[in-house]
Each structure stands twice: as C-alpha cells, then as structure tokens.
Length: 68
Length: 477
Figure 1: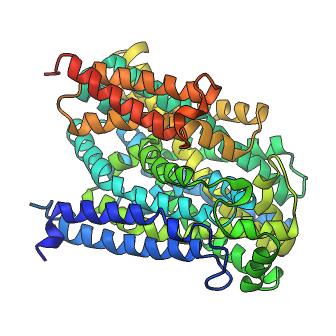
Figure 2: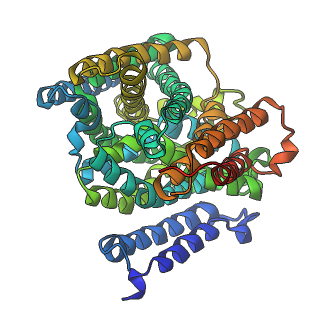
C-alpha cells in the first residue's frame, strides 16, 4: 500500500504506459483480431483500460494524500 | 428530411434555453461571466472539459483522416488524448490553486503575474489568440459542411456556418461560462449517444460490423495497419502525435480556464479519472465510419474526406435518425466554439482592454466589454470560415496545436521553476514560434525535424532557449 502513495511509482507507471503506446511489435500486422478489427484498435482500448485503472489508483492513493 | 430538421432545430432551441437559464442565474460580474464564479462541480467539469476538447475535428476531420490513413488513427487520437489527462494533475491542479488564491481569470494573467512581466503577459495572450481564432473558424466551417449535408444542399455552406455561429453567439452572450458548461453536459451526452448510434446504423447498412471490417481488410489492407494509407505513420510521426496532444491540449486557453472554473480539486481529479473512458468510447465511432466510407464512397480526394461522416449517415440512416445523429456533430463543434469565443473575449477584456486600453476600468465596464468582444470575435471567426476553406485536418495540425505547444515550457516554468526569468520565457516563445514558422514556411529544411513532426524540434528549442536564457539573466524576486 505504501508503494501506491509513492510518486515515483506513478512516474514509472505513466512512463511505462506511454512507452507501451509505441507498439512497434504489431506495427505491420494486417490480420484482424476481434470483430474484424485490427490489432491497433484492440490494443489501444486495452491500454486505455490500463490507463483508467492507473488513474483510479493515482486519485485514490496519491492525489488525496499528495504523496510523501 | 423535414423530421430531421425539426429534431435539429429543437436541439438548437434547447441550447438557447440553457443560455437564457444561465443568464437568469448569473451575477453580472466578470468572474461569474467568464468563470461561473469558480463553482463548476465534478461531473459538469468532466463533460465540459471533454466536450470542449472534442471539436469539429473529432467528427469531420478525424473521420476524414481515418478515411485516408486507416484504423491506426484511433491509436494516436484515443490514447494520446486520454494520456493527456495526466496534465490535469501537474498543470490543472496548480492552475486551480493559483487561480483561486490570486483571482486569475485568464491564462496570461497568471503567466504575467508569476513572471512579473506585462510584456510576457501580452505576448502569451497574443499567441493564444492568434492560434485559437483559426481553430474557432474551423468550427464554423464544420457547421457549414454539416448543415449543407443535413439539408441536402437546401442550406448553403455559408448559410450553415452563419446559423451555427449565430446560435453559439446568443447562448454565450447571455449564459457566459455557466451557459457554456451546462450546454457542454448536454452536448457531451448527445455526442456519445449519437456516435454510438451512428456506428450501429451505418454498420447495419453495410451488412454488419464484422462484415464491414472484413471488407476493408480484403479491399483496403493498407488501412488495417501502419504506416497506413499513403505511408503516413512512420514510428517518428507516431511518437510525435503522442507527444503533441500532451504538450498542446493543456495550452488551449478554453481548457485552461476550465481549471480556474472548477469548484475544488475533486472536480479536476474526477475529470482525470474518467477521461480515458470517454476518449476510448468517443473516438472509435468517427474512425470506424471514416474507414468504412471507403466501401461506399471510394476515391474521395482533397477536402472531400472531411464530409465522409455526414455522407455515410445520410446514406444509411433514415431521415429522422440522420437529424438526430448530426446533432452529435454539431454538439462537438459548438461545444468547442462557444468555449473559444468566451475565453478569447476574456483575454481581450482582461489582458488588453483592462491593461492597455482602459487601465483601472471597473468590473462592470469589463463585463460589458467582454460581451462586445464576444460579438466581434464570433463575426471574425465566421468571416474567416467564409473566405478560406481548407481541409480541417490540415489547418489544425499545421498551425494551432504546434503553435500552442510552444507555450508549454513557459507554463511549466511559471508553475514549477523558480529560477525561470521573464527573459527566458519571452525568448522561449519568440524563438519557438520563429522556429515553427521556419518549418511551416519551408525556411528550415524538413531534414532538421529528423523525421518527427515539427512539434518535437520546436518544443526542444523552446525548452532549451528558456533554460539557457533564464540561467543567463537575472533571477526574479
């Protein structure tokens, strides 16, 4: 729980999420994933989900206490 | 078509009614007119930030870009904009605190006061005004395109742009920030509902959601992947766009002042948490419909793709549904234009009229001047829209976003770096904008951007100049 109140945890988390948005490993993929949609759509939605959860943790544990 | 028009006109009347209601609740002070007396709560602030941020580009330019480039556009728009909400903490929270403590109403007030320079304040304002007015004009352009589509040409492009401008003008004139924020809630909900409905109706018309995507994969495989149509997305261009939204969006004066208008930190915090969800949902519709447009209307060129969304809706939706769906597009453009009108007016009132033209003018006088500026700005935006029509995408990415991103280093320095000086900030903005002009007009060879969009080298130059010039000049008190 202490980790969730540490600002460096969020610096690392948000930096990692940003780096993951540059998804070079699926760059040339043309095969559809779900419902005929390409990987880039599904991947982006999943990453947005992770970002949303990160924001919840950030708001719940860091922004209220302003960290330490 | 008559039913569509009735639905659309009812929507416009509802907006006007909200404007009048807001006027009744207003206090006739500049703080109330421009910031709703800093009383905007969590949900209203969230919808207001989202609706203000998502513009005519979301529905028209974005669908048009997706038509040309493909599904990958969703990645940079949805994630890039969602990630930008990180700035609600390190910029928005700080702006709210300082605004409340010092009574700031406009962005240049804060910058000028923090750095102790009226010149910097004027310069900061000039950049915001210069790069926001063309963006304001694009909202009128979008209105003209959409209303022409909705009425099958019965209303001309010029007439459509004028009608939309007039409606916005009336509810901003009477409702101020309160009217802006309340209409944003309605417009945000309308946007979400209509774009989801549009995806359902258009995909049904194309033979099903999965079938439409499969058809794209078979007939236009380059739209399924990156680099996408026209080889647009190199890795460096992708990275540039991811950075562009984070650097530019918080510098939009209409978003900045919403942080001032927040009731408390909770309102800003809630907005940040919800932002990735709304970007994930809202941006999917325009990209799908834009890409699918290749199946029904292949071969559009020039600014033609900017009309793909209304064309697809008109093709597949019954008349009554088309009217309702197009209300979503109007919601997107109007919710941005109204905020831009108000914030531009606030800057001309507080940073020009109150400082240079009528120093010491009363609050009542500035309140009236603000309304006069609203009228003048609305007519100016309309005039620009009528005399110069370009692809929305080109106008936005080539001028507004990068032009405003130049202000990012100065803003961060004013908020966090005590060693920053006014000369550092002035040099940063001047040289940053000159560098951008160099790239835009071709004075600086493209090779110097090293494959990135100009926003990357321009931001590096602006930040570097700020640091060096600040260290070389006298520290502020």
